[in-house]
Length: 181
Image (cartoon, rainbow, N blue to C red):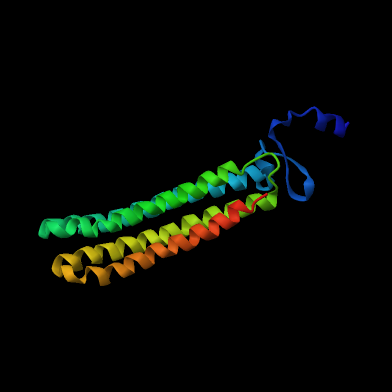
C-alpha cells in the first residue's frame, strides 16, 4: 500500500535528495533535503547581500564625494570612481545569482545545490565586506583629494584593494556554481 500511495503523489514537487531518496520539496519537513531550496537560497543570498554591500559603499562614500565636489568641483569626477566600484558589487552578485538560477534543474543533486549555496554565500558576504571597505576608503579618498588633488593616484590604491576582495570572491563563487551538477 505504501508504494501505491507513493506512486499516486503528484510528481511536480519530487526531487532526488540525499542518498538518492525521493524528496517532496513542497512540504516543510523535507525542505532541508531539497536541492532546489539550497540552490535558490544561495542565488538569493548572492543578490541580496551584494546589493546591501553596494548600498553601504555608496551610502558611506556618496556624501563625502558630494562634499569634495562642492569644495573643489574639478575633483568630483575623479572621486566618483568609489561609487562606480561599489555598484560593481551588485553586478557581481547578480551574475552569480543568475548563474545559480540557471543551474537549478531536475537533475541537480544535493551536493550540487550546496555548492551553489556556498558560492552565493561567499559572493554575498564578501560584497558586504568590500562595500564597507569601498565606502570608507572612498570617503577618505574624496576628502584627501579635495584637500590635495595631487595625492589622488596614491589614495586610490586602498579603494582598488577593497574592490579586489569582491573580485576574489567572484572567482571563487563562479568556480563553485559552475561545477555544480
